[in-house]
Image (cartoon, rainbow, N blue to C red; front, side, top):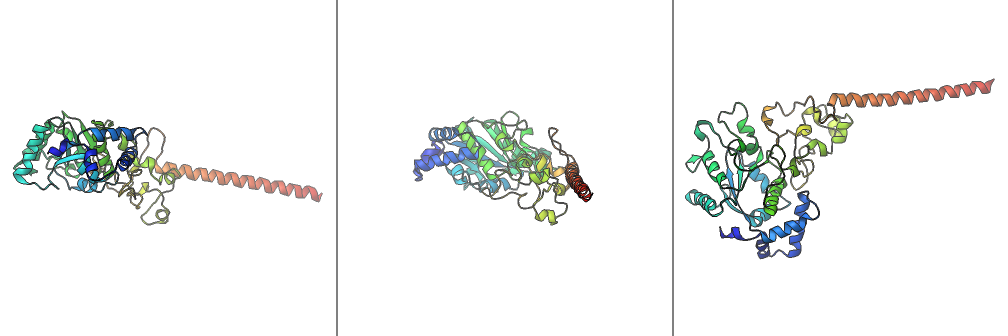
Length: 363
């Protein structure tokens, strides 16, 4: 636990990282967070002077996909985040300690870092039958969650399970699986939804809190605006096809081979707020739409209960700008028809004028 008093900079210097590379890291981190040009120096100053934040990472009802995503971050690398930037004092999935030793860490962290540690929660608590559907160390998970939340400075709700309830809370929800913010109401909660969230979004949130000592600016649903302020639709490279009324109608049709918009076969990008189309996955290589599959809206509340992933949205009007796919298609077809008609009219007039000249010359 003593390592928690060290700074990020002192740790990486001990690992042989040069100051030049440290500043490169800060610049890259500022860029990945979408911050201004002066942010790199603020990040550098914070990481040089502030103690590493103790982090408690707890698991409720979940599939561990958030952890799987987190360890694949490229900017910053998860090894820099976990081993240097923060002091990950407890994570029962990857820690060496178990049983009483692991539980002792929770008590020690509460006592030593009261109001200073960050509580990261993956999954959610079931409330039915007094929480007996998720037992840890002989007690319901919801009890451990409330205990550790009481002295935390803030809580990160990793993934759609912790943020919205996700598949565990889907109808009929027999365990009464419940989002974190419905159980903990006295602490700031940062929701990072997605099933799972993008790795760089996860490390980016941790980096921001480490640097500035506070949560990033959140939207009205509690999500970081830097990553959840735009729809996937807004930055999708297939957007031009949507606007042109060019859609894939069936899997593997000619339009699919041409890379047309996937809206008509169920893509939820127009109603899903996330950074998939800009940050992308696997180090920025790709994202589902790029691989030919529509967005299933996994970062939105209740996406499991909103029908088939392949049922298309019937109306996606946003701020009075857009029309639905059929209207756009008809408008586009009408515009093309009008152009064709106009072209035909001009051609006919030219031919008529030519014939008149020929007749005049004949006389």
